[in-house]
Image (cartoon, rainbow, N blue to C red; front, side, top):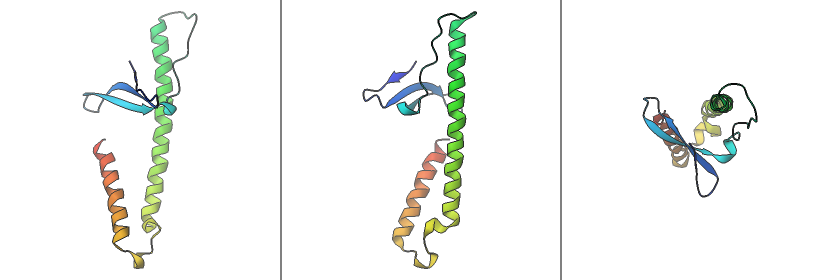
Length: 113
């Protein structure tokens, strides 16, 4: 079961974390591939067929999103290798603040895994 938020920009889905605890996952509406296809006639269990179609779409979206994450990680690695584009001889406390904030955000992401 999904929950539509009032602003219609996200949907919340029930899920489970890696330890099997129930959690809600909120996804931007534009990231959702749409509902499972409607079928007028099918041999066998319709609910199972629709669930399978939905799972395939979810898997496709999952795989493409993991690819996007790999691209983002590659961009981060390139940026760190290049000192985030800063001249090492010109580093000041503003630059330190930038990388501290980047580290904080990445640590937040890692803690959610």
